[in-house]
Picture 1: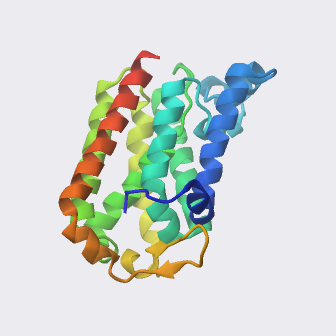
Picture 2: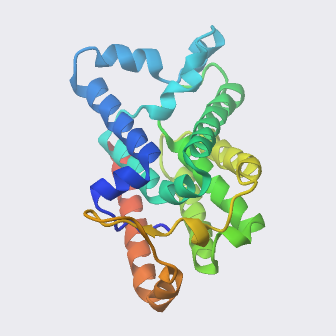
Picture 3: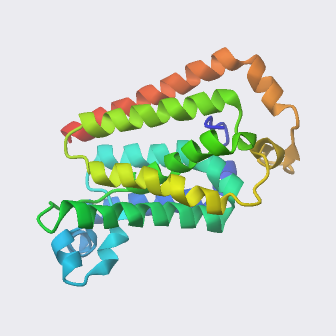
Length: 250
């Protein structure tokens, strides 16, 4: 569910929304830091509560796509690539976009009302990504037909690690993380209406030179290789922590 083994071509074809979001992350990052006009883009789009209070409401949306540090953009983009695909396949493109944007916007609205106009400028996709985690939490708690036990345990582990890093790292918008998580869990029940079991419709293997084929035994094969899966996932967690440490000092 969280292991990516596709080629770039297959990933791009299977998860177009996530591909576009990650591309936007890096395009804006490069523009803001290295290209002409980048400073203006940053000034117009960054989250700034005082400006929102004066009517610049687009700042509740634009920070979701913007990052200023290399560690920040790598961490959030890597997290999106790991945690997003299962939900994009499960929900479909439009519902996934709704979940992602609404969670990010609600996180920024909460920042505006709870932090006040004196709060420092903020940006990043973290609130929206925590919204995805919130949706997984809802699935684990209330839609056990959509996720198996092993992945349920991994979701809880991921959320715990994410919350710990939220409070440990400096310069983190804690309100955005918490309310992104809450928003994702609150939105998920509506978006999941009518959704079938993940294992029934999402395990499509794509060959680069052939036709997509359905593998009904994939979950059985994964159970037989659970030790290998666990090792790979902990390596992934280690990479996330590494990126989080980099982001703290850059």
